Image (tube, rainbow, N blue to C red; front, side):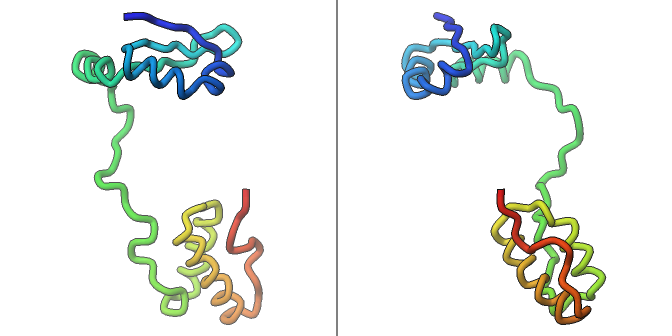
Length: 126
């Protein structure tokens, strides 16, 4: 099996051709940045070997399944104002369209119920 070393820039530019080398020819690609290895790209066959012979340790407990952030969240008009304001704050940086939709409704609900607009807009861009 061959091994190829490419810079991160070469990797970005030649992604398609490198992908074909990995898949078809079992090439191993080492990606470097400023001459230092960042990571490697290997075939599925090599990956299966790694999974079998060098399993990655779990560093922390991961809940199974990952809870849905919207589970149990109702329409803002049917929730207490305290819950609406709390959830509105903690979902501030979410880019999930469903959460952004809920935040839009919550923004209007907070304004209608308190007479004040929340400090941050319901949808964050960028």
